Structures are given as C-alpha cells and as structure tokens.
Amino acid sequence: MSYKHPSKDIIESKGRILRGKTICMCLSGSVAVISAPIVARELMRLGAEVIAVMTKAATELITPALMHWATGNPVITKLTGAVEHVYLAGERPKEIGKADLILVCPSTANTISKIANGIDDTPVTTIVSTAFGSSIPIVVVPAAHESMMKHEIFHENINKLKKYGVDILGPRISEGKAKIAKIDDIIDRVIDLLISKKDLEGKRILITAGPTREYIDEIRFVSNNSSGRMGIEIAKEAVARGAEVLLVAGNCLVKIPDYLDTVNVVSTDDFIKKIKDELGYNDYDFFICAAAISDYSPTDCIEGKISSDDVKTLQVNMRLTPKIIDEARKKNHKVFIVAFKAETNVSRSQLIDRAYDRLKRSDADLIVANDVGREDIGFVSKDNEVYIIDKEKHITHVELHSKRYVASRILDIALENYRLKGKL
Image (cartoon, rainbow, N blue to C red):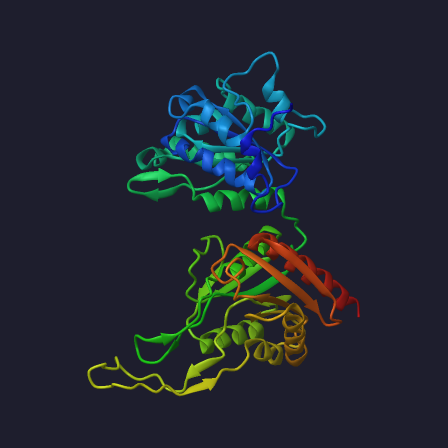
C-alpha cells in the first residue's frame, strides 16, 4: 500500500498558480521561524512543492518534524553524501526536486552577513551560494531586532545582496523589532518572481479599485461592500508583468501594498475628476475600471451633522451619477477600456447579456462580469469567478479561482485584444 502524506491534501486547495514549481524554503534561527509552517502551507495551497532546509539554530526554535508535517517532505538539516545543495540548487537540467526559487524566510542578520560574504557553514548558506552559481531566484526575508538592522555593516551586506540580484523583502519595523514581511506579501513576491511574464513592459495602465462614499452630511455616507481586492490584485499583477501602473482607490478594506503608486479618492465625483485628469494629460494604454462606483449620490450634502433629536424622519434625494467609463471614453478615444459589471441573483445568460449591453453603450473594449451576490466570490472574498466579454461577444469563463489568478487572466485577454485592436 502506498502512503500519501496528509499534508499533500492541501496542495492546490486555493488555486493552481504555482503548479509545477518547487520552492526551497530556508529557515534560520529567528523567532519569526514560528510562521514558517504557515508560509509553506500557503505556497502549497497554490500548488507549490515546498522543501525545507534548516540551520541548527532554527531547529532549536521549532523541530524539523513540524516542517516535515507542514510540507510533507523530509527536512534537510545537514548536508550529506547525497549533496543536497547540488540536488536542490545546482546548475543542471530541471528535474523533480530541483528548486525554482530559494526563499530564505526568516533570515537573521547573521545569515544575511554570511551569504553576503560567501561563508558557507550551514545548509542554508551553502544552498544559497549554490543557487547563485545556477541563477536560481533568491528571496531573503529579514527578521531581527531593529537596532541590529541599523548597523552600517549590515546595510552594506544588504546592498551587496541586492547588487547581486537577491530580492530583499521587508522587514517591517514594529514594536522595536524588524519583523518579517506579512505572509500575503511573501506569497505575492514568490508569485511575481515565478509566474509573471514581462509582457506589459512599456505599457501604462490606469486602474480603479474599492468603493465610493457619497456623503449625506459631514459624517454619514452611502457606500457599498467593495473591499477593493480585485482592483488591487490587477494592479499587483500588472506591475509584476512590467507595466507602469497608477491605482486610483477608494476606501479599500484590503491593504494596498506600499510599492503600488496610489492616489486615494472618496466620492464618485472624485474618481471621475481624477480619471479625466489622468486620461486628459497623460498617455495610457489601458484603463481598467474595477472600482465599485456608486450609481446614485445625494443631491446635497448637509453641513455639519444631522441631529437625530431634531429630525425624526430623514428623506434623502438621490441623483444618478455619471458612468465613469462613459466619461473616460469621452476624454480619450484611443485608450483600451476594461469595464466591470456586477450583478446579483441573475442567471448566467442574464449576467452576460447585461454586461455586453453595458460594453456596447459605453464603447468599452472588454467587460468583466460577475455575481457579487455569491458569498464565495463576492466583494470581500479572496476568490472570484468571472465572464470576460469582448466587442464580438466572445466569452471567456474564468472559473472559481483566486483573485490574483483572475487578474492574470483579465490582463492576458486585455493584452490579446489590445494587440488585435492595434492591427485593425
């Protein structure tokens, strides 16, 4: 009877974006190592195979048995006659087991300094040195006390690693400590390095995300449940693929990465003004409108706060707001517009027909339709399922998947249609 390690059951439970990729996860002796099993399993949930390598100091904080449980693979704690460093990171044809990426997470200041100066006295430092020679991508995620990070020699070592192409992620300064980057940011960086094509280099993309707020008085407003996640994921994917991106965002529930060039706005009018200014004064190849723009806005915003002591019944008159994609098309006749159409409790055919009708009326080039009434793919979900429709009513169904994966498919189809449009 063959034995299947139970940890393998989680592979691809959140998607297939890292299918076929092997990640060598190197652990050094920081207390942040307690998050290593979580990072490993998140990578596995996206389809990756994870092989853990631990320094002696790391094994004194968590046991190799824990990482064996987390990954389903035996843990390397010392190098033997099997030359594990060559097997994982050596310069040889891609085979089962050879790493596609080395992730040193967490990395102490000690390990960083050793790598920077070519000192190979642990399994981790030897594997990283071997990876240098075979051009395997290396990501280092530092974690140490803040005072250690201020050391001039440490900064020299960090800069030396960057010079030689090592990707340094973080750290986050919090509570007097340089903590490892957030888990979502670590996963994003791995995806960026392993998956993203550089097919958007030289392209400028304007993207909207998040909800609007339409104020009734100075503290009360009408809004919606949009988290902004879909637009943010599109922006992240576009940047990873080489595009120059400006994200115009409402009050998003999801944290926007610091590396995204972002302008924050509030109301529908704010969104429209910013988009018209950008499309009027700058050359963009794409405008992707993923924000949940309000269809209605109060006709007046009352000064101050409406007193519930004085006003027993409140009537609010609402006006229809302009469609942002209509305004964008009036401002720029050349930009490739990707619109979004959100519906609730409709059939597949109704969803597609309504989206296509909106595409035609707004002269958009592509439209993405989804049912936000479903909890598994709604505004706050990390997943989505969409129909992407072009001007010829060709329909691409992207089945339930992570919003990052959906973002990649939207950009794939947008770029394909953009190129076809350029040939007409």
